[in-house]
Image 1 (spheres, helix red, strand yellow):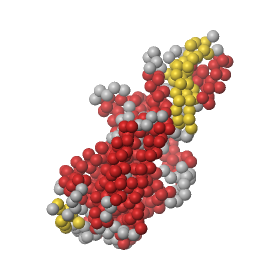
Image 2 (cartoon, one colour):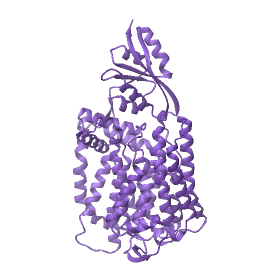
Image 3 (cartoon, helix red, strand yellow):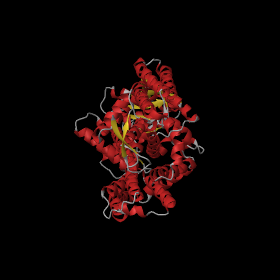
Image 4 (cartoon, rainbow, N blue to C red):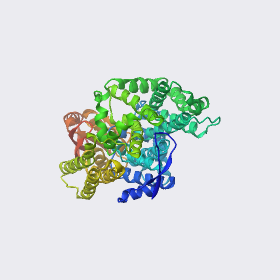
Length: 580
């Protein structure tokens, strides 16, 4: 018999309880990992790497956010200016400097270790996101240990690791995976302070580790994405203070010393950027970016309820269990642990639903609370047996639909059947089917583990095989590859009609983004120059070339699809033959 710790209520002391789950190799792996923290962490790191690494090195830069972040970091490394944030000559003050420093450190380290062309490899810029995703998984485990048994904490972390949304963010060189890490760290420390107060632990000298983690995480979150982390933490504290009619437990986090420490960490860069740019950063980041999200920014407006609908996809494979756990969680809402987790989840979720601008990754920092609430219900075996159990079919439906879309999409775009993906697709379908058919509310973890295995094989199929094969969706990579083949040193380029950030990242910071006439003038100014002309700009290019007597020919032509604009494109790479 293996031993675990079952909690009679969220956040209560745990007592040993015997388990008799047998008949599944996946459950046996879980039993093995439950023995101690070292095994648990090893399993979570291994699973995280298996889930996050497929496609990590092979998928080209994704427009537009990832390419913008990576290009701004590349310019920091090229210029040696680690205070100002720019995309070419334009300031980029929407977010603080944290993620750029992390990406720059990754590039510098890779270069120091001898990686050739490190500045042009997008996967180097993705390393902070990979570390953030893995760290968030481990911190979900650490946070969950304050509420549930070690076994359930492992399940909560695996639920996060396999979630569709975190898998996407782990592969993108931007802020959200690392922000998730800081939020989970802060909430884990906050939970320990709150639950120790609820249990009546009157320690005159509470450990310094909780405030150290809490205030450092807050500082990191602020440097990554401004005051957003303060919303998650602040709404949780205000909600708990209202429900308990007290907030005295906050003194366990040593707020005076903590605030000083946080300011020590965040103020130097804010002072430096203010010294450099005046109030331009604060006007752009707070007024131009954050407050503008109250309106439908960049055509991302949507009505309330969209996040609830997206949840069924973005939190797969955990979503079906979360739905079945909801009635039990609501009944336990006055228990200290459940109350804390709901205070973390509900107020911020309502804010995001009310705000008009909606992007799927906004709610990612709330998913660890859902994971822990769900495994708490699984551990207590109080999952709903109502019509909600029909949602277990979702464990099979998602891999079936995703596999069909991936294969059909690959055949449509590349005219290739991507046979290499088919074994992974088959395995994902089989494990998804097992998760559905074998579901039993008394052994829900068995189905969840099969669903996680399905997510793993789906990651190999889609991210590892299909997406890298869709080369027409990444025209910037094809253009950069063509420019590297030219017979001159240091080619310079001007682009007309196609101005995606990925082109600047892959073709060089000096790439001129202009119109057809400007590209013709650029081409006439010297040798080893190339004009990247999208079909819609060819007419103006030809007219200007004729007017200035420019002779040119087509080096090659790139056929592709602009995913940012949702339309096919055709880009001719022109080279000069001089003037007449």
